[in-house]
Length: 184
Ligand code: URA
Image (cartoon, rainbow, N blue to C red; front, side):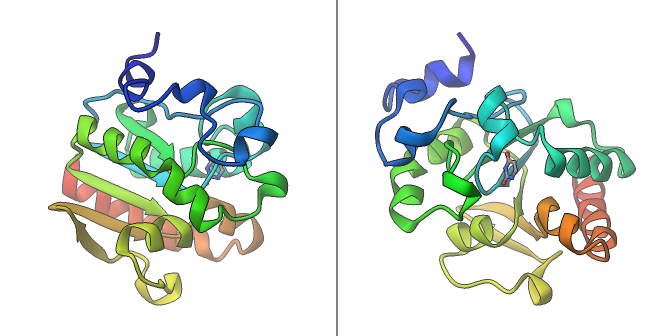
């Protein structure tokens, strides 16, 4: 069994989790992907259709953009731990509800504790607001580094936003450059 799944099973039977209503519509619980001693952790919002189907984060069109942005900055995806705020796909890819974020949070908290990353990258508004516990304006705050329980967290646009607005791609590339400068 995947080492992270084994650890999260101590909280609950993660692959059969019933902690919120997303359990009813999901195909797979998307726990995360990457080494558990990663220095960089990337946190998105929630699995989409492809992630739900394959049980892995960022394997669809947003994942392709993420891969490209990482590669452009010389960051190897296989060295990064990638997960989401919620581990199950919300119906029609709606944003996760507050209760779903809360129900899933013990898993994410444990993942951060285990990985103990040097830097967390928060992709998009949901991840940003969950960690900063306030409303976030990515237009004003992307590329900024905050702190969460002693760990630096970088706010960045979600790669899916780039599908709708290609101009944001340069910002995401620039923001990820900070990751490589800080860590690599
Ligand atoms: N969007 C996310 O936030 N996470 C994924 O895993 C895929 C798309």
